[in-house]
Amino acid sequence: MSIDTRPVARPTSPVTRSRLAAAGRRRKWGNPLAGLGSLVWLLIVVVPLYTLISSSLMHQDEALNGDPLAVPTNPTLENYRTVLDSGFSTMLTNTAIVAVATVAIVLLLAVPVAYVAVRTRSRLSSLAFRTFLLGVAIPAQAVIVPLYLLISKLGLYDSLPAIILPTAAFAMPVAVLILSGTMRDVSEEMYEAMALDGATPLRMLWQLAIPMSKGGISTVAIYTALQAWNGFLFPLILTQSEENRVLTLGLFNFMSQFGMNIPAVLAAIVLSVVPIFAVYLVARKALVNGLMGVGGK
Image (cartoon, rainbow, N blue to C red):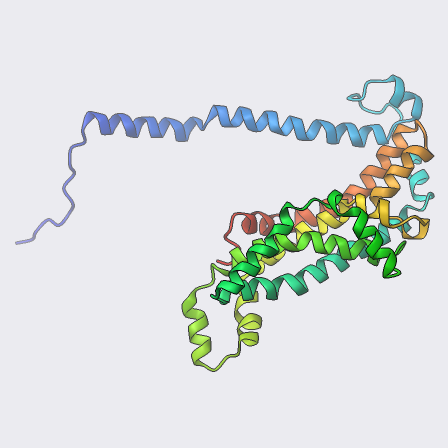
């Protein structure tokens, strides 16, 4: 005699059926308010980008007298040629050097600092970590005068290190904050297992903490690169020669050099945005994961 082992269907209440029906309708139609909000946000982002690119392809008279949202009637690349012939490549190279060097310094210093802050349980370490994070609350404008005097005394004025070192210093607190949060996600059992195998703290940092914190490290690298790429105050105050000029300062000078040549200025902006935008597209997933605090998982 066989026994029927199939589960017996239980009757559902009217409330449960109504909830299931409402959930089905939401899955079918989605969230119209969220969709409308996304559409509005997309327009806010896309329209200025479209205006920027289309105006950079216009002639001067068309940009001044025409509709900024209209498609260029006679597109031209002359504005881009004007910018490239005005030392843009030198400024792009200087900016890339500043960004890469700043990221290297921040990662070289912030990773071990965050590791010590996470692995050391003493009150002195906690106090030092909190004191270090006070740098987040100090604006660059508040220390620009003593910083200028310090850079001048060190003989670094009007050089790329004069931009790199302060930029790295002001990026360090946020970098340590992100990395310490990421390294806390690493399981304590993993550290204990490596310690039982005789691993030194340096080996645990190199073989465990760093590989498990790739998301946070990527976030710090992107954040620092963006800060170095878009920095304006330090290049303005700490440099003056054309051979050490970076893109942000160059765009400021383009506005004076080209006068009311709006398409040329917009072309310079487009060319300066493309490299860092390409980096963001490549690493956006790591950036979002790191900022959400899941970089170490």
